[in-house]
Length: 184
Image 1 (cartoon, one colour):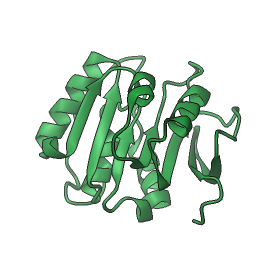
Image 2 (image 1 turned 90 degrees about the vertical axis):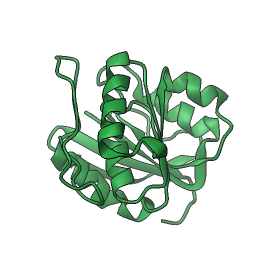
Image 3 (image 1 turned 30 degrees about the vertical axis):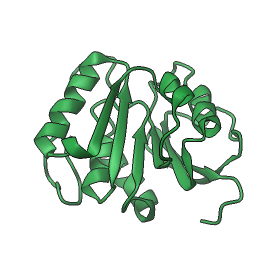
Image 4 (image 1 turned 60 degrees about the vertical axis):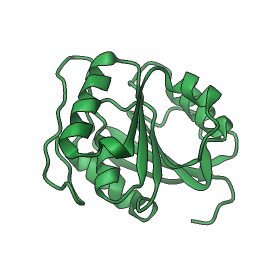
């Protein structure tokens, strides 16, 4: 895994191995950023299931203002910290070891322009994560939610969100949501 574009282009990312690890491929990451490139400059990013932090670090490399990276797994948090330090993004990141659901329940800060969601597959987290993000008030007025999933077998309406883009890349689906009624 590496940073594809921007000020840290070509930098390799630390990642951990394991059967339960499913990193976003460079191909899918590039496709995601082609879909959302107009939202990235100056954006505040929330990464709800951060893993290695690859999506947030790509956004920061492309001009996002800051990122909050959340993961429950201590190994992921350690990898995120190593990547933030290696990329010299430490001052732009807040790293949270905990549940994204707990974080959103108590969140009251500045709103996020981009929310990345790449929940573990086959664990029933897609709908609860979309509901939590939609109902938390953490999404800015013109913000987007970017969901990576292995299917589209879930509800497509969540508390004022609507799908504005959806693409398939091999076995991976990328779905982009905005607030219902927002012009894009």
